[in-house]
Image (tube, rainbow, N blue to C red; front, top):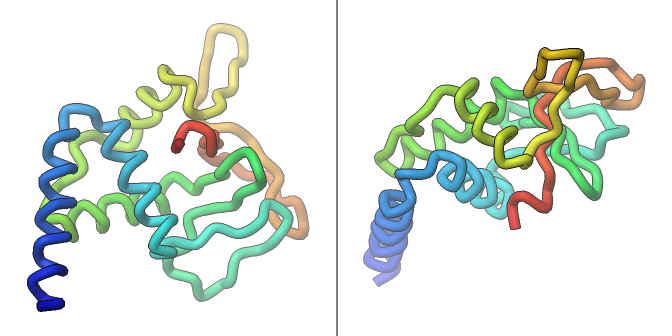
Length: 140
């Protein structure tokens, strides 16, 4: 019985993802929320350092934002969708562009140039790196 319920749940999730597959941003936010809720990925407080052996570390957070390492989060998103028998439909750069257009991430403007990653100070040593600054409110 438990196996049947598990298979039904997986099929239902796959069907729901397929219904929304026309919108990569919605796919991303649903997948991201699921990874966070299942604790399949790790974030740490913006003032803390990640564990050096944490293979599922995707970034930092505070009460308002996720500060994401782009390569790490996209690796986990792609693995999540592969587990659903699906493929994430767009590149990380196109996703960032779409997230920026919907004002779900902070952007950096310098004259006429806009970057979809921003500089942030993270960890105990306040290391200066480029991250994707995703608004937590965008995931609601």
